[in-house]
Image (cartoon, rainbow, N blue to C red; front, top):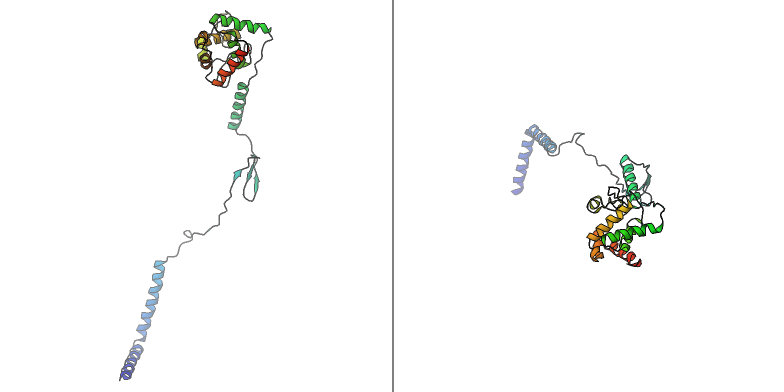
Length: 233
C-alpha cells in the first residue's frame, strides 16, 4: 500500500515536471542570475585607480659615523657624502674662533723695569688702605700682570684688571692725571681695582669678601689669596 502511494506521487511529479519543464528551466536560470548579481553587489569590482598594490619597502637605517663625519653608514652599505660649509657654518666658525682668541688672549706687555709695577701697586694700596700684595695678585690672575691693553674676555671684561664696563663706571679712577679714567690704561686700572677692593671690604681686612665681590667664584678667591700670601701679605 505504501509502495503504491510513493509510486503514485513519483508519477505525478514526473508528469508535472514534463508539463512545466520550460517554466522550471526559466526559474532555475533566473535563480542563477540572481545569485550572480548578488555576488556583484556584495563584492564590487575596484577600478584601476582604486586597486591597491602591495609594495615592498626597504627600510635603510642611517647613522652618522662618529669617527668620520663625512660618511653615512647603513646596515649593509656605506655612502660617501661630499660636504662643505654653508654660510651659517662659516659665520659660526668665525665667531667661535674670535671668542676663543679673546678668552685666551695673550697680553703684550711694554718692557718696563720690574720695580715699575711694584711701585704702582704700593701707591694704589696706600691710597685705598689695601695690601699691595693683594692688588698685585689680582693683576697677575686677571691678565698675567699685563700693561695697558684693550683686550677683552669673552664675557666683556676689559683692560689689564678686567673690569666690566658698568663696574668701571662706578669704581674707575684717573690715576695718571690725564683727565680721563681709562679702563684700558694700566695705572687707571690698578687704582680702580684698589678702589673696588677697598669698598668690597679689603680696607677693613675682609679680603675674602673683597675678592668674591671682584669675581664671584671661590676658586678665584682662594687663588688670589694664595699668591698674595706667598708675596708676604
